[in-house]
Length: 130
Image 1 (cartoon, rainbow, N blue to C red):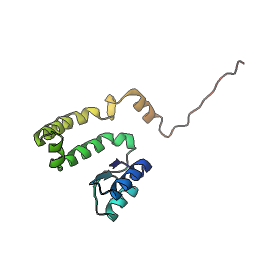
Image 2 (cartoon, one colour):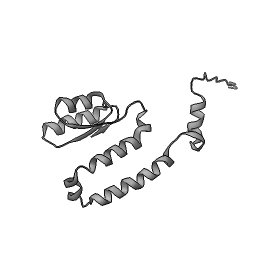
Image 3 (cartoon, helix red, strand yellow):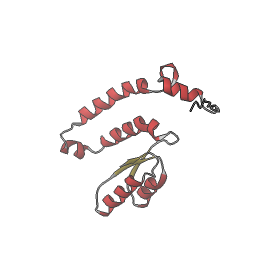
Image 4 (cartoon, one colour):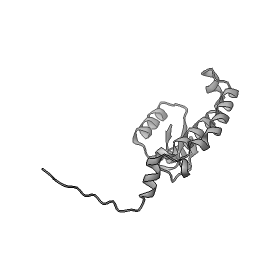
């Protein structure tokens, strides 16, 4: 189960339900109730680096999840995925990661605009012709 904040109610509910049914779980979170649940119940929780907006952490969560899945070889084998396939996929994704960044001149225009307006006071005006 993955919840960047560790506070997503749907994820917490599903994890608690799965735990009571004896499911094997791998959890990923930057903290919150999900990480506390993992610690209190001796479950594996891969710590994610916190401090980002959840959508900005999507690639970090993807790489953490895929990297963690490599440790579950029986799960991969049961789904017809070979360890080597997973490793080559991760290596390929790692080459794309820098291209997917949103910093600098290559950042999308809406992102650059939002960054330039940080800590600015917007001024709206109009003309009511009705």
